[in-house]
Image (cartoon, each protein chain N blue to C red):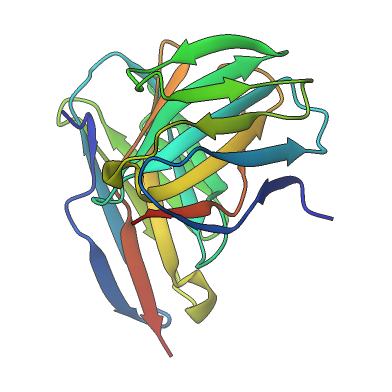
Length: 111
Length: 113
């Protein structure tokens, strides 16, 4: 029973355009949501997070939106760059104690 | 200088064997984790240790035994390996429990034949 789902295994975007990665969750009690980025042969690295009491957090080219009523969050990357090509994991924190991760979306930014 | 390092990177072994994966962090963090990335690519928490004490133990078979000799190390020992244990195992650490950024190792790909 997966509580965090990323239903798109892959996404291809042209350089300079917007990349939108989506994530759905089932547990309304999650406290925080995070995005991690993973390059091949490396571990995931933290990218951006959002508290469950907010609906938007922005950091440079990266913005995360949270829609609690829909139990949905998304990561926007604009403009997308070839170096953004990686696997992006959505994660949710429960009870400030335990993390649940999605299965990842592989982003390919074409030059 | 790698912050969280796991060894080995690849491990190929026969069913029934016992193997260990080592993890070390040089960040001075208090909390360490083991995750398993299954065939569907989900990263699932297995164990969490805080200052050498077990905090989270998910429903992992007791063939898996974590050992934390000090807070910089969290090793994973697996007895009587089964085919279903084949996966990528990630070690991670964070400054403290809770909402703290986790730093991951590069993963250990375990293949059980």
